[in-house]
Image 1 (cartoon, rainbow, N blue to C red):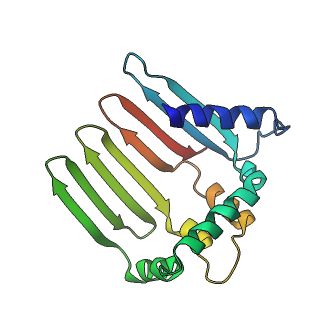
Image 2 (image 1 turned 90 degrees about the horizontal axis):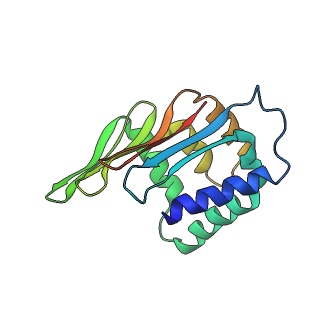
Length: 172
């Protein structure tokens, strides 16, 4: 519930930030989640991908903090190794509480989580987007990230399916 409230506040911030220009030709990030439990909510948001640019300082701060907190982990090297390996199943865990599978395809890094309590969650990160985020020695080029996201029109980035919660994030 806290995540949904946060997303609603972010969407309000966009609505009042003067970003409501003519976006007919722009690609949009669409978020659509619903919780069918009695106290559940429905959440829908449509934002121009270009809105990402307004968060450039915060995005850079997150990646700088991630790098500073994990000096012993080289995320760029890990990413490059994953890409060089090609399609692969990296992790598969089956247990009484649920299953987890981490893999790559020709085009995506995929995490599949299936638990009795939460249902199915599928997150797919396009490898091209990962290349832009984990670029050795270079700052994140958000203009290139936007171009990469726009090229994913019609594709789901995240899907959630469970008994009570259903949702997805995609590019339209």
